[in-house]
Image 1: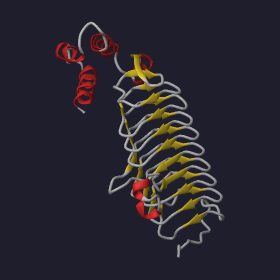
Image 2 (image 1 turned 180 degrees about the vertical axis):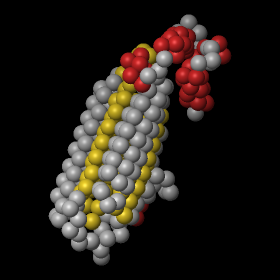
Image 3 (image 1 turned 135 degrees about the horizontal axis):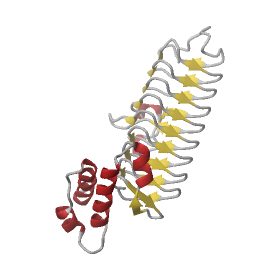
Image 4 (image 1 turned 30 degrees about the vertical axis):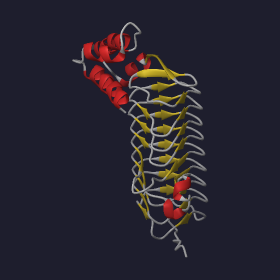
Length: 261
């Protein structure tokens, strides 16, 4: 039987249901009808709003805000795992994230964890499936769907209703346009758009917002034109591209890794 705690804590609403085995920092705020399971750890400054649900095992860092009807740590939607509580592995949420209404983040499988970094915004209805890894300072817009084992780099931005297939990687500072369906890896620093998504341009706006220097943006522009030109093969372009800029080196490395996969 679940062992629920009884609390008169001023920051925890009396209607919240919190397992006595959960570990919650003293200044965590928990709103009406929120549910926190055993095996959950919540660090200081985090706020769970009304009807938020946190399943264990789950570790949530500092100063996160989890909005109504969001569910974190739910059982994975994976047939081979049976979909029951016994199939659920860890969920790890970093610091300073905002998970808006109806966001779902499912636990990992087979000893892996689903991991969300720091300073991310998940808008209404976004979904991170089992074993997904999201970096930091990403914007995941409304109803974006990240399938199992997807990996999202730092500073990536998604428009609403975009989808990412299983095991696909979205590189750092990439912009995935609204409605894009990504069935292949999205390189870092680019704009991907369409069904099925294709690389369209360099994400200059995102790079400037991130604070990348104009020199590096210019180097990336030159590299982009070489690497995505039809005048030469990708392999030839990778041999010729100047990698002295670290962002160009990262773009070339990502393209090489995709080619070898």
